[in-house]
Length: 393
Image (tube, one colour):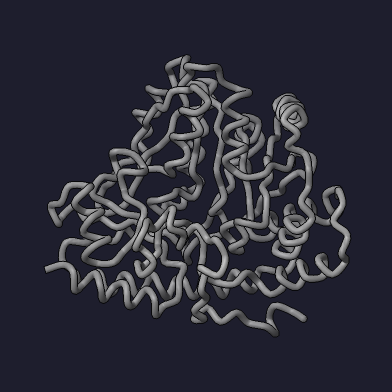
């Protein structure tokens, strides 16, 4: 059975409450929130690729779930995927396994910085970056993005000044960027990489959304820029977003520098971050080997949702779409409505029936904004937009 012969129906409404999905769980929606447009948690409402589900079923039918090694084909499949789709000649020897991307960021901070050292982030940025830095007793150092003519860019002059401070030892890069949807260009990444290398700042790059880009915008893996850039980087990869398998996959740490890789591997061993989940392994292997057609179909559908969102917001006063280049997350600017952040949250929830991620969660630069997940059925998005239009006077 091939993915081309069993096409996913992205219009299928699936009741995610049949399992304890975070997106629709009371701990996220709150009490009485079951009828809200659940658009906060960053996963898709679509079934995983048929090839992934088939592979997991075969593994289930085997019936024995003892300790396992990494399947021989997994790393080659990842390398082939990166080479064919992104032009990155990833060396298999540089890959380590990890439970998840945030684990990689946390271990990198603990290994290559000291308590009190600064870690640079570029807000508005994924809120867990702040938690990882602070919970590891490091300092958050902000290099805010600049919003200019509806598009975000990096403030390289400010970054240069921050990187020159010897107490700032690391930078967390979000590539592509969550929540603003930028797919950083090769030139932007090289300029950032040059600044960090010049001042001894290690780049730790979260690239979990790398495969989720729209036409005309190509994701560039940071370590594909060249050997010098790769030597000053730790790259975190995972198929979680690409194939909607966040609850049944793990992640990969890519470290070109041999000494850093040995240190990281030793820490993995010390923390016993070295076990393999059989279902995660077969899911990822199937996704990288045969999931390309499903991903293409999913991105076509999501692009259609983005077109709907763009068209409808053009007729709604007070709301502006920050045009995304990648991710399935829309960053919406509500500042023209003149509400405080708390008022905006209340308005979206109580008047529009939207449960989204508040902009201020991504840093003070996100106040007046909201992140909205559009990887849902078109009918659900259409209804939510009707509700928003009716709520805004």
